[in-house]
Length: 301
Image 1 (cartoon, one colour):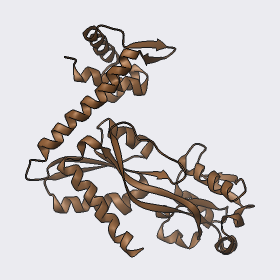
Image 2: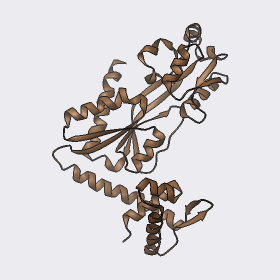
Image 3: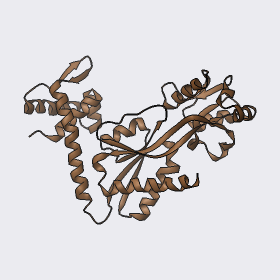
Image 4: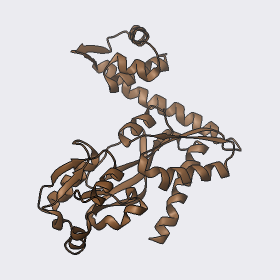
């Protein structure tokens, strides 16, 4: 029977392509990773990887093993979850990843609710963007992640993961006073000739800016860059231009900058988890806590 720990190393190599990345992930040396994979090849009786330049690629036999490994790991976690579900109390450690603007609205209230209801449960919060937190969920580094995807951009989850929708976070235009009044009447087209403030190229939020402006019939003239939505709002407040940001990211003292919502533009906020962990009481409790945290806002809207 193949060693599951070695199979997991092969799976991680398939995703990360280098021995160094796998060694950093597992906290062992690259030589140890290489040795374990050689032993796995001896067990299987065939070559599992081939080097192409600086990366290792799986052979057909290696890909078959990785496909089965994902199902094996999921089955093992399902067994652990089923056993945990027989316990009378919700205990253990639960790690929840969240992106920055969801901390105050979702993560912290949900964590506080869990601590009140399940004092024997230890809760850990990790600040991670979805690009990092989704792989972390799959690698079992975290149990759940609060994630988002933009309404105009589909997202495919890796095998074994599911995401439950929580609420929609509208995109809004922030603008200085004069332009804000026109945009409130005319919509995004009023900002056609304005200077724009946006994130770096490649960031998900800048894609939303380009897409929304394109739908309005123009290309934004991006003059300023900021790595945070709050920084963008500060630039708008100082008259440097306009910006499109998620409404949830707008601090109370910047709410007066909101000119209008973006037609058909939003972030879909959800919680991502491993399907095999859903029976685990702590995971089920965390998802319930997130739902209950969102519910009062949905009832008020």
